[in-house]
Amino acid sequence: MAKWFVSAKKADFDGIAKRFQISPVLARIIRNREVIGEDAIEKYLYGSRKDFYDGSLMKDMDKAVEILIEKIEEGKSIRIIGDYDVDGICSTCILKKGLSVLGAGVDTVIPHRIRDGYGINEQLVRDAEEAGIDTLITCDNGIAAREQFALANSLGLTCIVTDHHEVPYEQVGEKRNYLLPETEAVVDPKQEDCGYPNKHICGAGIAWKLIERLWEKAGAAVGEEKHREILELAAVATVCDVMVLQDENRILVKEGLASMAEAANPGLKALFKVHDIHPGEATAYHLGFVIGPCLNATGRLDTAVRALELLSCRDEREAVWQAAELKKLNESRKEMTLQQLEKAITLVENSPWKEQSVLVVYLPDCHESLAGIIAGRLKERYYKPVFVLTASEEGVKGSGRSIEGYHMYEEMTRCKELFTKYGGHRLAAGLSLDEEKVELFRQRLNENCTLTKEDMEEKILIDVPMPLSYVTFGFLDELKLLEPFGMGNTKPVFGQKNLRFLSVRRMGKNQDMARFTVEDGEKRRFLLLLFRGLEQFIEDIQKKYGEDAAQTFLEKGEGDIRMDITYYPSVNTFRGRRELQFILQNWN
Image: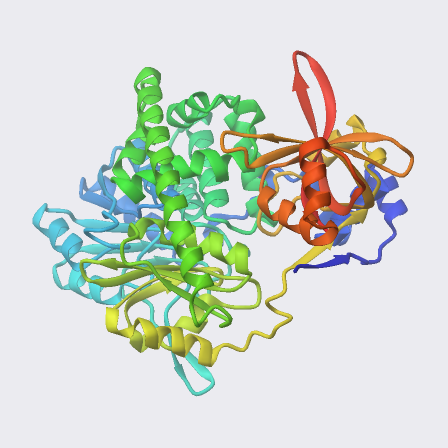
C-alpha cells in the first residue's frame, strides 16, 4: 500500500504569486519542484531557446566538429552507427540530416536488436572497413565499446563517440578508474572532466548540439526549418528516453512541441495524423505514449531502419502510409506484451522469491524486445527494481527498470563478472549473460541490495490538498505554464478527502476504464475518470466495504462508497461544449 504525504515546503507563496502574476497554488507547486529564486522561476515559467547551453562546453565537442569539417572537405566517407530505440533512431536521423546539409558522403547503420545486439560491434567495424568507410561516428552508444574501437583503430578508421550513458569503470579500493574508449573524440557529458551543465541530456540531444555547432563552425546558411526539424527530433527522444525534464531538457521539449505545431518533419506529421492528434495540441504524453511506441515497435519486432526511413521521408503521402504500418506493428507489440506480462505476474506470484528486494524474472519464450516494457510494468506493480530476462541465440538477454534509491548500473557493476555485456544508467539497464548464471545473478543482486522496507514503499506526494470545486477553466489554463510534464517535472497531484461515489460506468475497448459521478460535502457533483487500475479499484472497495456493498454500487450505483482521492483536472470538449472533468490517480 502506498503512503500518502502532503508536501510542506515553505516559501512566500503570495509574494511569488504577485511577482509572477500566478496563483498561490501554482507558486506552491513550483516550490515543490525545487525551483527556487526569481531567476530560476522566470526560466521555469518562460524559458526559451536563448536559455540553451552552448554545445562547445561539452568535452571534445569542438574537436569532433573540427574532424567532421575536415573529413567533409576531403570528401571522406562517414558512417553513423546508431541504436534501435527512439533515442538512437532520432540521433541517427539528426546526424544524417545535419551532415548531408554540408554535402558529406554519409550513410547510416542501425544495429538489428537480435542479430547485432546493442551498439557498435566488431562485425560492424569490419563491415565499415570493407566498405571503404573513413570515419565512424556513434550516437546513443559507444561509450562502453573499448575493444571495438581498438579494432577500428588497428584498421585505420577515424572514430568519434557521441553517447550519454554512464562511463564504465573499475573500482580500485575507494577510487574509480574510468575506462574511456580510445578514439579521436568522445562526446559524453557523463565524463568526469566534462563541464557541460546538463548531465541528463539524451543521445539525440547531444547529436542536436553537435549538428548546431557543426553548422555554426562551417558557416553554413541553414534555413530555420532545418533547425526546427532537428530540434523536434531531439525533443521526441528526450521524452521517450525518459530524461529528467528540468532546466535545458524541459525547455528543449517545450520548444520542440511548439515547433511541432507546424510539423517540420513529414514523418512526425504523419504519425500525428494516423493517430488523429493535431500537432498543435501535442503534449509530452503524446510523444511518450503514442508516437514513441510506434517508432520503438520497429526495433522491437522488425528493424528500426523502418522508423528511420519514416523520419527521413520527404513525401507526405508516402509518410502517411509508412506511419500507418508502424501503428499496426505497435498494436501487435501491445498484444504480445499483455500476454507475456500476464505470464510474468503469474510467475512472480507463485515463486519462492516474490518477497526478494530485487526481482529477476526469466521468461525464456518472451521476445527479447519486450523485456524492458514488462520490467517497467512489474516495477510499477511491485515497486521494486526488476530485471526481465529472455532466451536468445547467445544465452540470455535482459532489461532492467529501477526505482528511486537503487542505482541499477552501479549495482550491476558490483557483479559485472557475471555478464558477457552490460550497460545503462540509474533507472534502466541492459545485459547479456549465460543461462546457467541466472540464479546466481538473482542471488548476488539480492545479497548486495541495501534497500530498506521504507525504500520499497511507494510514496504519493500531494502537492496541494484542494477541493474539486476550486478548479476553474482559468486555473486549467494557468497549469499549462508548468508543462511539459515528465520525469523530474511530474504532473501536479491534488487531493480531496471523503468524496462520495454516486455512479459508475465502464468504458474502453476492454471495459477496463470507468466514468464516475462523485459528490462532495456541499452536494456538488463532478465527473471523475479512471483510465488505469479499475480492477484494483474494485478490489479495494470490496476490501473496504464488503463484496455485497461493492456489488450493489457497481451494478446499481447505490450505497455509501466514500474515498479520499488524488486527481488532476482537465477539460472535455464535445460538440463545441467545454466541461470540467477530473482524472482519478490514486484512492484510499
